[in-house]
Image (cartoon, rainbow, N blue to C red; front, top):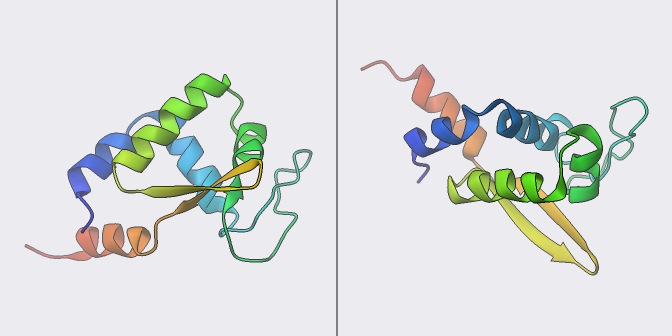
Length: 105
């Protein structure tokens, strides 16, 4: 189950929010066109870290830190495929956040 407070705290940082949106923005496609900022792949899957760096320019160590915070908050998963690292939004995260905000208490 998603810890909503941890998720919101992780997303409160503008750079982490940009990283999350970069991962989410392509709908899980595997690559971005660095010139246009558009997806250049249509297959569902994870986004390569090199493509995240392309869209959110920051030092590699800074990107790693932000990805670790997002992962620890339960928002993303990461995996290695050969020499590349990939990240994806965890299944159900967007639905869980949406459900939280649409609940009436």
